[in-house]
Image (cartoon, rainbow over all chains, first blue to last red):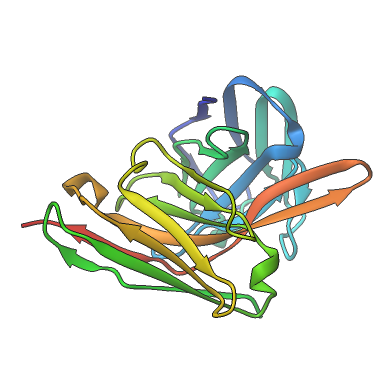
Length: 109
Length: 125
């Protein structure tokens, strides 16, 4: 089973700053199957990035994803107040089909 | 508009059973594989179960295998999760989520593109 480790656990930044979130896999992951979600308190997760770097419908272009193999990154170029949330990476594999990272909380500094 | 609405959560005693439902609308339900994901309050996401569009293929997380059963009724646009032998550690918000498979340029991509709002299951005496 592939384990996804996200870092940092908590990231404290100010609006307007750049955020860089990391997701490291215990084994190589196909870029096609690396996904990022955003979750705000009391809400369901929201699809942000699929295929490691493709933005989902309606996602602003300040969100970008990159990486390959075992190291993937979610970057938010200029933080808006509504971006402060918890972010999860997820990979699609064979058994189990889905594995999530433990999440990174992006909080206002 | 795609909508997924879970129901059936509540308080149940350890060892008890509960059946969750997910009502789907706004898309051709029978064309999509579906999943259940849960989240202990304040904690991360845990994938639980997968069911193919036809209902012929299922997968379960080790933590629920043998206790939970996923099923669907494509005629009623409904997904279910039968939960037996419930434990305190099953206390969580349970989400149903649609699997989206997108293929382009020789590559296929998978994600969970729509989620319900979740239903809270509390296992306690």
